[in-house]
Length: 404
Ligand SMILES: NC(=O)c1ccc[n+]([C@@H]2O[C@H](COP(=O)([O-])OP(=O)(O)OC[C@H]3O[C@@H](n4cnc5c(N)ncnc54)[C@H](O)[C@@H]3O)[C@@H](O)[C@H]2O)c1
Ligand SMILES: [Zn+2]
Image (cartoon, rainbow, N blue to C red; front, side):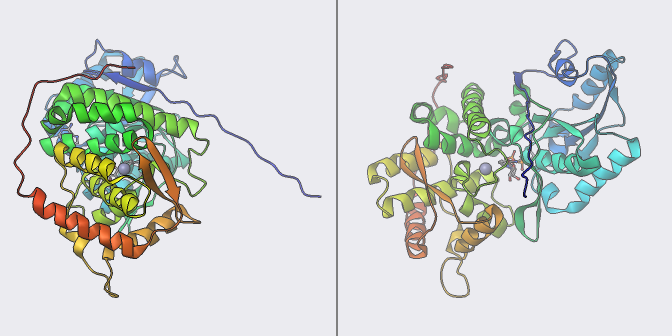
């Protein structure tokens, strides 16, 4: 007789929106860390993105003062670990190892916390290190970029790059809590204000035509990096991503389908091919453009709708052509097509690629025609050449998206 055994583990994690989280008058962090155990002293190791630490010169002192204000409840067990910001930190295992060594040195246990403050790369790396220490030390994340506040900061996966492949090692572990502090966005470069918007465009295209129209209406303010518009698009993007993660029945991606990875098969490959010269968001914008043109060329999407979307992406400030797209593989076809094989390997099982039928309506295919991909790439190259001649977008006053 064969018996089947099983169990399910419920996960809950809050996502807070706040401002000035490390001001002692702000109790969001204090409340969050005590949400399961109010009566004990919580031990914390902090990991901070170097560029956030230097752009917010009082951050480390503010954190020290915050912990000092609640000595009965909070303990900062060591000075914060400062790690390089950006993809560098995911490309070298030694940064994860260093965090593991610190966790060991200060004797963190599974009820302690790693508090991570930084962009998506630092969050992915430090969350990975915490996840494998003692099989899981709890993590509280403070995402500091548009991309990480709108998408990756509350993702239930982490990881670093290995063998030239994005996110080759990593785990699925929800964070203990996520705190989106809008103050961090103020010091972002224009490039990083814009790059994260690609994930908002992606999720709008898949799930919410109304949100897509909001992005179109506000394109010039987005392009200028207006923080009021960026903050409101972060909220809607977060709601849509979370609705998917919590409501689609497959948060740990056991099946092969990954609808939120629209545009990502090419994006991940482009990031590796360009040695991460392109930001994740910039590569996603190109990946979206490629799969949108592919959707047109395979008869699924109306040309006029595709033109509208490409105009939005370019209006936001994305370049939809990168020379890496023109690289050829040994057999003569586009080198980027290897991304499809790696994507399938990463998912396991069948290839699943999301395409678009209309704005707000994604759907999945299980194969891609390489010749059509090559034509879509040619089309992007031709557009890239003509876009280079267009003037910069103008800036106008803010129009704020109302919460629905
Ligand atoms: N886990 C997931 O599900 C998931 C989802 C999407 C993306 N990601 C990952 O996220 C990473 C990209 O994240 P990102 O777009 O946030 O870029 P990033 O982390 O590379 O940060 C970009 C740059 O901005 C700097 N920076 C961060 N915050 C700043 C601030 N407030 N002020 C000034 N500078 C600041 C960083 O130091 C870095 O130089 C990629 O590695 C991608 O794979 C993960
Ligand atoms: Zn992404």
